[in-house]
Image (cartoon, rainbow, N blue to C red; front, top):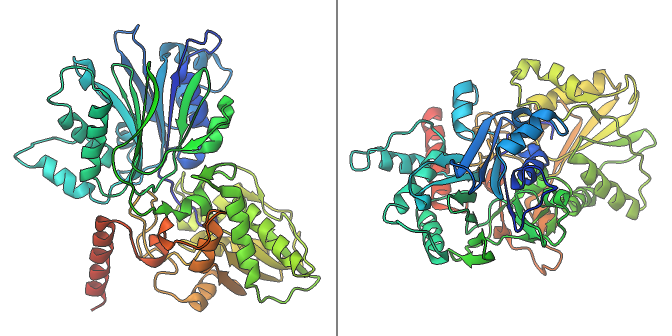
Length: 519
């Protein structure tokens, strides 16, 4: 992506079915591995909570700023070995975070907001740790309700995670003994009745029970797998393969996984609603080796490229080269080129932009005036490599347009391109996201109040083409689908049509405020 977005989060969980003496740290090591494979989904803060019945602290949590290798130590280090020993346990959950609520610039706020959250209590059934991926558009209303005189709760952060902890705590008030499966179903049904938005949630209690849920709309991905030794779950299905797990399943919307010494059970806590998977997960955020439910991310991105090629009107010459913007642009370029070749178009490809680092431009906020220097750190390109060429850049989306403009300049000035043409694997982003992607307000979105010609002029390209909404849905459809169901994906950031009541309420408030400003 030329204009970097901030991802919502990643969750991970592991349960050892039997002791594995060769596995230092037990489930904590497994969660460390899962989180290491999901830093693409957030690297501002992280944490792991483990359960160990041999400890005085049945649930112990280590959380803080940075990635798991920053917090626990790098692979193979003595520091990591010490941390895995200190937090060893047969059950663990973990979290990578990039804030979509809360203050990212306040170091103390980052530390407080790191997950998992722990709620301590003398009774085992009321002590728990949890983490979640998503965002609740109605968290402000929920917080106001809890902060009133009747409830009188005090909040230490402004994250919706703390709101979730309060509601779990309230539900557990009457319990004095271990919860059974029906109790957990009732707990998550109660949360579902209150929450509007996206959430995949992992909960670990002081009896060693692991509970994992996915909201009834299925906004965010959640995959799980097991073998004779271990059960594991993660936001990215590709992460599970690092544990040697192959029989991978998607947790369905409205389903609850319960794991303890009795085994693994799947229960339904809410009837699934019309699916509204986040389209941006496949367009940009997820790893290419993952699947969103049963849709291969890699293949979907290739289909996006093919859809772009099917409506291509550019007249190719021997001086035209096709270049992807790494990383997501690479499979899109593959589909684009293959489709052109199938039509008999003679094309030339180049990997002009070389991804040097794995950090993202939003992690260190250099500000819009420093993005050009930051981009030079991220991308490398041989000077004059594109000299005299007409370059077609393939990328997944344009958001603000700031870094897009700088990249086009970079390709012209540093690469020597004669002309630059941008092909975008998504429709124009005209609206914000309320469900876990920290997408800018409408005033920052380059396409919010501009047509295609105006965006083209703003970013300085010779031609610009977006993917249409019907073409995107065709690319994201499951292979067996006979027809495209538009509501299988949330396209709110493109269309302004949101699948939940509070999403609709938030955009209505935003549009009314815009009208008031422009009167």
